[in-house]
Amino acid sequence: MHVHKKFLCLLIFIIITSTGCSTRRDFVLPGEGPEVLYQLGFDAMSEGDYVDTIAYYRALQGRFPFSAAARQSQLDTIYIYYKSGDNALAINSAENFESENPTHPRVDYAIYIRALSYFDAEPGWLESRFNVDLNIRPPKDTLLSYSAFEELIRRFPNSIYATDSRNRMIYLRNRLASYEKIIADYYFERGAYLGAINRGNYLIQHYPGAPVIRDTLILIRDSYQSLGLSLQANNISRIIASNNL
Image (cartoon, rainbow, N blue to C red; front, side, top):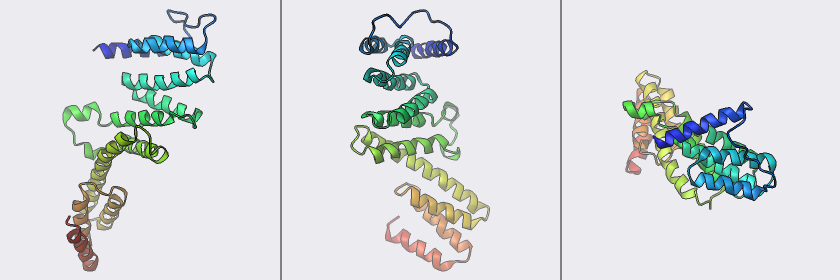
């Protein structure tokens, strides 16, 4: 409950400052340099006071937009939004940082938080609460999270976030594969055997190693048999047998 109250205060602060109204404190004091403003914001963040942190960081970014402290404050802001549970703001802030600082040594962090924000966005609380099958919902956030983790590993294979990213990609890969399998089943059950084969082949090509691979091959084999294509069906049977699937 305490976190939710903090987040509510943060949202109220953002609304006030975005509409041009004055806040309860003048955060831009004469003579303050970027390091001082950053330290004030960082201290507030360490205390969990995200409202003051955002105010100090906005002052810093407004007065010293090209300073190293301003860029670090942008990274901290991404973290604050993510920690507060506002995935949309975390994603937007991360994307802005990536586009404005493409060669920054910590751009991998921005990509990582963007990927985590999409990752946390699925499954939704409604699905979890009512035990809806997670595999039947079109996995938009899953795809975006998977792509972001994939980008991080491709661009920064030695990043400290690479190992965790790979582990999360395995989970996401399995979910995406399960979704593709459901679509293939849908085609098969309706007699659209060519559609089932194409969807199954897409699954195998894009999500190798997923647990549903064996069932997908069986579905492809059965689709060939239903089409009267015994040669292709027998080829799939041999693949299943030779790979101990």
